[in-house]
Image (cartoon, rainbow, N blue to C red; front, side, top):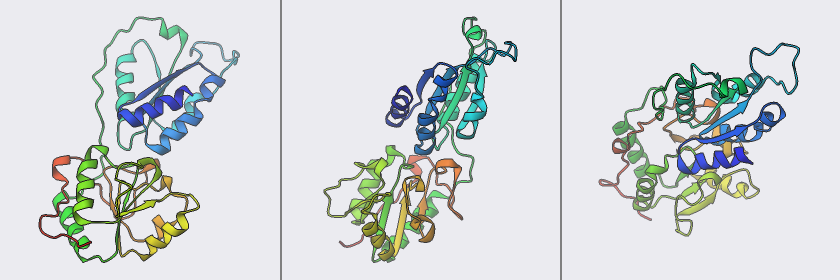
Length: 278
């Protein structure tokens, strides 16, 4: 419960939620919230107890391979010591904030926990993907031209969207009168009473009708669209104009897709030259 609460805090605040747990089976219980945060792009720092390294190998009470268990899903996996506490915690926080947001996992033994800290680490900051960025002006011009030519466009908004840009995206959708659908994690980001709101795309039973709409569309634009929320295979079978600021869950990227700039001032999809009619 604490892990899920911390991951939701990270989702809402866009800064790492922190969960602390005991060692052994108590730490193993974090597998569920860590796995959930890993797939749902929620910044999370998990810290658990662990037996001191100097304990004899024969002392296996509550000893589990925690680092090995969590490493495949975590950005930073390490043990906190008196010497590295400041630097390591800052690095773990920055790792969780590197988009797509994710999880860092640290262990701390009781013996190290009572020692005074000897070094203050640098302040953590939000990380950014090293994937080459697309030219934002060129990408915007390309999308404007395709929207102007399309007769049945459909915008798809997913959990990878930068919520700081929500107002600009809503304004762009409204000015162009573009039909829009959302995945469950971003419900509420657009007005669902608007006549151009199509529905929610996920793995639910109603997706049959939504997939029909996708098949009928001649232009599909995926803003922050992450297939981690999609139960069917249309995201791989249908052509999509991907607009992503960071990799999707598990580090995946659609083929021939480049990340767009994360500079909010440089990613404009205005409708100053061409507008669609309803």
